[in-house]
Length: 313
Image (cartoon, rainbow, N blue to C red; front, side):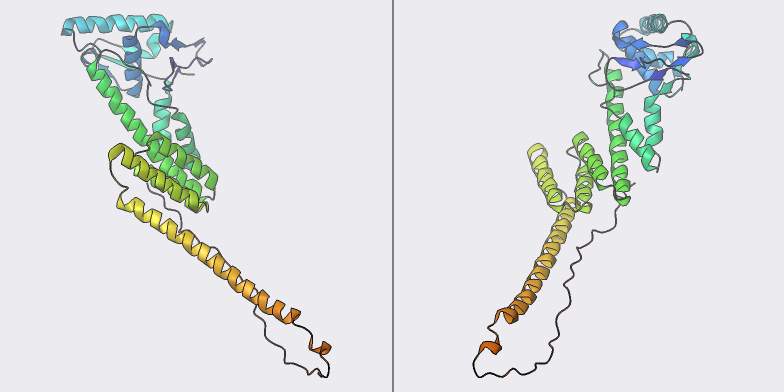
């Protein structure tokens, strides 16, 4: 079994569990090697097996050194990694005269991106589970080029997981799993509270679950967050969605109130006839047969339906 490279932001970049390939384990602890060695392995693993030139790696990790000194630092860094990873490392950490790469490794970043492109609900759920936090959270080194690459990768993977959660929420709604859709929407908003893309997804999830009051409260929270952080109001699409939910909620309450009122009037008419003093008790009054009165049928109230789920891909 190949070594497993994880990106959950803790002190491990390679799986600590007993994952074996051939007859041995490959375990790697961040704390046992310098930060530059960690950064080198992280960058190579993120290339999904594609080789990277030594020149580029030297410029990325040692930008403030001369060319020859930077290449020397890279050689030392590779030696440090081989020493830490142990026997058999050359099978997976490939370094020839011109290029370096990590091959035949199970990299959860690669699994995350592959699963996030799937139209399948279960695979999207698995992709969302793989994203456990910011890529290499709280990790930094003294290299502006590396930090720029890492910041771009963090933004990119955040955008991927947000898109994944949005599509997952829509699929869960369509399947009638409204609670699961709400959970996906909440996580989406927690990851990027300033994104109205996510705010609308959560509002829709609440509304389709029949929780229109919570949908409108979410809109209020969205408006307050945007006002506080950016000094702007929600965009037109978000406002229209809130208006639609509000009208739907108002129409439903009106229908229920009207039905209840009509039913009460009908009961009152019946009760009025029932509780009037009987004419048989009045002296000198002879009962005459009365024509049967038609009675209104039962009152039916059907709640308004939310439009069919939207799936934005």
